[in-house]
Image 1 (cartoon, rainbow over the protein chains, first blue to last red):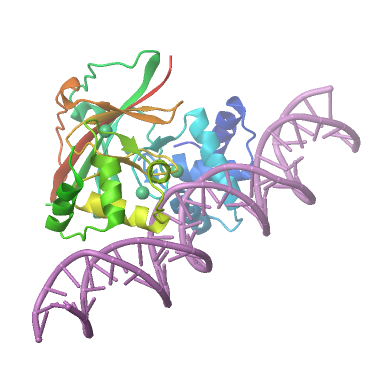
Image 2: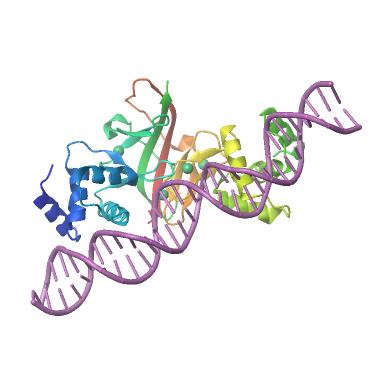
Length: 137
Length: 137
DNA sequence: TTCTACATTATAATAGTTCTAAACTGTTGA
DNA sequence: TCAACAGTTTAGAACTATTATAATGTAGAA
Ligand SMILES: [Mn+2]
Ligand SMILES: [Mn+2]
Ligand SMILES: [Zn+2]
Ligand SMILES: [Zn+2]
């Protein structure tokens, strides 16, 4: 929960110019206690719901990619026709509800340590993520 | 490692007519000891490399989807611009090499038991898959 | 204020996938 | 045996998420 001048600092300190588009998107993504998952399309809808100044689709893509690159967003690997992003950048896992097509966080503490007993020579591990697919019981 | 008449039986017994296109795709996908990962594009290339009778792209998609539905193939959840399929339908996990854009199996035995200590009411777990992203060390 | 690199934008392009509808074929049963 | 039918294949169009282009706008520095 930050105010605009905090977003301006945050953007500036990561080398991103604090444009009104980026500040607006920060407000939508980060002005809440709860983290959430979204697609580009979700974000576009939220933007048009909360402002009259439209932000172009290209800018939404550009901004999400910039934020991901800076580590303010994560992309969640689920097979889908579109990308899912996560404002929760801490290490955690996911349920994917195949009926509702909905992603739900699993706290890292709710998953026993995932031990990978094999390596690929010349490669280092970047992330270990568990995806639990669920369906109506 | 089956011969064509086995594929014919396999297809027929699962309610799929054994057309020459499906038999050919069975040969490419299942006529080997080793399982492997592929994209639709990979499969199209293998087909044109091993036969003169071309199979339309629509049929390749149709067939892969039909085989997935029957459980002869799995789709691997990674966020990418294209779908990855797996002829290994047993329970296992994956490395994803982000440099080579390559999927590598992790035997289930090489991953410590993944304990999920939380549930979603009204939902049952369908699968638990670990994706280990790796990059050049 | 002026300059410049960075950012936004509309729009076109791209690429994987799905749809359409006509032609074809495996299977059934008279 | 073979006509009938449902299932299958096909070329190509359509669709959709995403990325590229290139012109215009703007933040920040000097
Ligand atoms: Mn998909
Ligand atoms: Mn994607
Ligand atoms: Zn999450
Ligand atoms: Zn695999």
